[in-house]
Amino acid sequence: MKVILRNPRREIEVSGKRRVKELLLELDIPAGTVLVIRGDELLTGDTVVGDEDVLEVRPVMSGGGA
Amino acid sequence: MKCRKCGGSAALELRRHNAAFCSPHFVEFFKKQVAEAIHKHRMFTRDEPVLVAVSGGKDSLALWDVLIEDGYRTAGLYLDLGIFDYSRESRARCEAFASARGQKLHVERVAEAVGAPIPEVQKVTRRPTCSACGLSKRYLMNRAALEHGYAVVATGHNLDDEAATLFGSVLHWQTEALPRQSPALASTHAKLARRVKPLYRLSEFETAAYAFLRRIDYIVEECPFAKGATSLAHKEVLNRLEEVSPGAKHNFLFGFLDKARAAFERLEDVQLRECSACGQVTTGEICAFCKLAAQVKRRTGPSSAAPSMVE
Image (cartoon, rainbow over all chains, first blue to last red):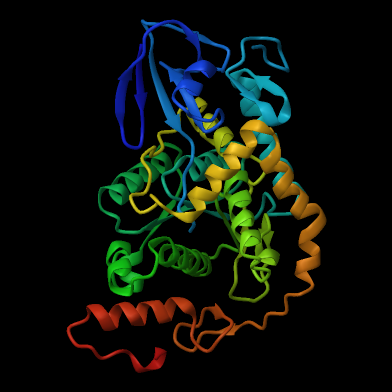
C-alpha cells in the first residue's frame, strides 16, 4: 500500500495486510496523534488495510507556543 | 468498531471516552462539547457578536464552523504574520471559508502594526519567534475587537493546547501564569475584550476529525517556525502519556481547572492601566507590544533613533 506522510510530505510503500493500529505501531506514531484517511473516510485502528490501499497519515498536532 | 449511539460503522474511536462514533454522531458529540463549554463558562450569548480569531488551521476554522452552524453572530479575524507562503496559503483558506459561508473576515497585517513581518521581527530582536508572534497576536486581537466593536474574542485553543501550556507552567512553576489559564478570561478593564476558548473540552485529534468530516479546507502544513518549539515537545510528552493512559491529558487539565486554579487565582493582584504610547491595557507604563515595535523600528529603520515615547 502507499502511505502518504505529512510535514514534510513524503510517501512510503508498505506491503501486506494489517490493521491500522499495527501500521501506526510500525511507523512509531502514537495513536490519536494522526488521522488515517482513505479517500474520503477516516479509518479506525481496527480497520484492515492492504496492498491496494492509498492512505494519508495526517498529523493533528499544531501550534508553536503562541 | 461500532458507533456508540447508533451501532453503525464507526468513523473514529475516542479512547479517553471509551467510545466510538459514526460521522454524524461524532459531529453531534463535538457540537455538544462546544455548547457545554460556552454554557458552563458563560462565554457569550446568542445576541453578542463574537470575533473568531482564525489562522486557516483546523482548530480555528472548526470553531468558526460550529458557531455559524449553531446560529451565533460571528465574524473572523485573520492576522497576517507575513510568514512567506505559509501566511499566503493560510489567509487564502480563511478568505475562502468566510466567502463560502457569507461571513465577514477582518484582516490585520502584523507588519503594519509592529513594523516588520514576523520572520524579520525574529531576526532583528532575537526573541524566540513564537514569543514575538504570540505577543503580537494577543495585542492585535484585543485591538481589533475594540476597533470593530466586539466584546468577546474566541480562539481555537483545544484541550491539547491547554494541557501543554499547563504542563509548561507547572514544569517551571510559573505560578503567575496559572490564574490566567482558563477557558474564559473576563474583561477586567473597559479596553480589554473577553477572551474565550470554546474548544477546550476537545482534543486536537477531535478538532482535526471534525474539520475533515465537515470537509473544511484547512492548512495541514505546520508553521515553519513551529519546528523545535518547546510547546510541541510538551505535547509529545503528553501524547506518550495519553497512549498508555487514555484520559491523562483530560484529567490533568480538568483537574487543574476544577481543583487547583482557584488557589493560584487568589495570589494574583494585577493593577491594569493604559499604555502611555498606544492606550491599550498593560501593567506598566509602556505595553510589551509597543516595546517590541520600538525595538523593531530601532533596528530596521533608516537611522538608529528610537521613538522617545517608548524608550
